[in-house]
Image (cartoon, rainbow, N blue to C red):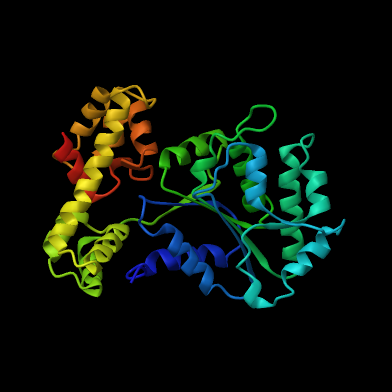
Length: 350
């Protein structure tokens, strides 16, 4: 059901991956629109010639460069000083079925200790990755490097105090546009993060976007039928085409709650989250704009679900995007609540 009418996005990604690596791709969209699962579907359908490294930063506490390295690499403890060629050959021992299931870049313990000790530079990380990708390419496979929820590492800095993310994207450019070695994808729902990276890493002409959005009304109604929802018009008014909210509604229905009761309780939850943010701000327990500034911005969405970015840009917008209250589409230049449910919650709270 999740992939109903996602043929366009799936085809677009497969076309990108079928060609020579040339650009960095941002896979973006509002929260719970299905970005991660869509990526998994695409990777499952790839032929055996692809080797996918998929790193998801969701729920990972990455505060330092050491934390980042621990997430990026799959350390093979107890292994000696193997060459990179020996390491990469072992990736393919399990045959085609093993390819595409690798969650980190393999590295023997001894190499890991040497390369990533406190005295070494972040550039050593990139050099090791490049050599691994070169060996994989040399074996006749196409490496694909995917970082999901990448906005969670935007505060990580190296030993000199420089943000690591800009360097990472410069590495992506090297792997794609310059060396055509590895496809590089970044998935995120924080599009201000994309804009900052785009500027800091000078990605003009080096990056493209693939939007994975909530479903439109006609497609959403067909998915409602598959879920067995009876009050389609009411469901649309509350949650629209947000697949994550469809799942929540379905789970509450399984517990014997009527659709209307479930929708009302879901709305109550979103109102509570919004009020909680405002309360923390007012009590000085959370850093950010004043509650009054936040309300003034949210007021702009009482009558219209979408607003032009230029109408709401500034520190309040940045705060509300980071809190997953608003979604910014940098391609279309519009801002809207992250979900139909949140839109209703905003109108209810104000």
